[in-house]
Amino acid sequence: MDPHETLTLKPGMPLRGITRVPGDKSISHRSILLGALGDGATQVRGWLAAGDTEATLAAVQQLGIQIDRHDTHTLTVHGGQLRPADAPLDFVNAGTGIRLAAGIMAGQKFDSVLDGSYQLRRRPMKRITEPLQDMGADISSEEGKCPLSVRPAQLKGIEHNLKIASAQVKSAILLAGLFADGDTVVVQPGPARDHTERMLASMGAQVTVDGNTVTLTPGATLQPMDLTVPGDFSSAAFLMVAGLLVPDSDLTIQGVNLNDTRTGLVDALLAMGADIDVVETGLEAGEPVGDIRVRYCELHGTTIGGDLVVRMIDEFPILMVAALSASGETIVRDAKELRVKETDRIAVMATELRKLGANIEEREDGFRIVGPQTLMGSVVDGHDDHRIAMSMAVAGLVADEMTVVTDAKCANDSFPGFAETLMELGGGLLPEGQG
Ligand code: S3P
Image (cartoon, rainbow, N blue to C red):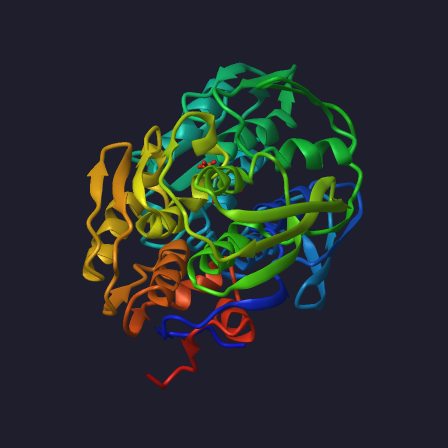
């Protein structure tokens, strides 16, 4: 299945039926990185084979870890001793990959260089290099950006108060803590996603969580895992909003990760009056999993800030699209982090949505949108940012004429098969080359 260069959207076609989404990106990255540290063979099913996670997989292979691909989504990670790579590790666009790996590499007995694409080279790395240096790591950056150069050093546990509620920073520190002398304590200002803590605990690491404080005591031998990766809530989010906004839609997404640190969008949409049913069906990989059903309905505006922002940090591009269809005012604050994601997601979404005629008030830490607004069809750009490309595609489904999203290949970074899923559900996506 080749990723689509462009997406051509035809508005007004309802999305109906039952579907699934690919495996969770955060958990897929971690299954490779933590699996590599396990004492033996970690079995992974439902692994997300996407741009970002393939980059992490290749980097871990460069470190001498054998990974058997049984099929696209099923693999065995033969955990054990990491060995020096003979070239810089290339994480391409994967912020999660490079930041978590930096924590691991800080504790190794050999040098490494961690790098990525032009886009990753723009993203802030001091947030990890500074706490790692406090732990004694010998890590340097290019003016706070990657490439990162890491040399061997003996680490010590620290107590660190996170300035931002970032799971990537929390995870980098905890992973370095595995190689440190003494306990590592991370105090987070809000509930950032907790997949690392869950996975480490499942491997037998001594991790305790007390409110927003996570403590890791090193020393335990990490046991290999046997896990099935649940569907990615952040991918389901695009389908959910599409179903809510296109008249006559009624769709169910099965097998989605419902970890509370990830599902803030459900709370935000319910506050907007959305017709959503969430049914938990079980546990996969230590995470609650279930089905999400959405039906078209009229939405109204809401205000989002504080802890809810952290629990839906990747969902603001698509929330913007929902807010344009909602009646009244939607205000988002405390979301400055959006400016340092794959792109500045506040500025880039505002720019692209304005091409469809939208009126958006950008704010330093969020935005204000007054709806409902009628969008017109146009040509918009995905900016090499998967969540922008897919959000603009959903905007195209509710515009009043055809919309073309260029530079849409990046959807493959987290949701391979996005276009095919929309088509299967009957959504208005024209096959490539038509339109
Ligand atoms: C992620 C954490 C979040 C999120 C990213 C994935 C993770 O980033 O935006 O898509 O897997 O830990 P921050 O930790 O920087 O908020």
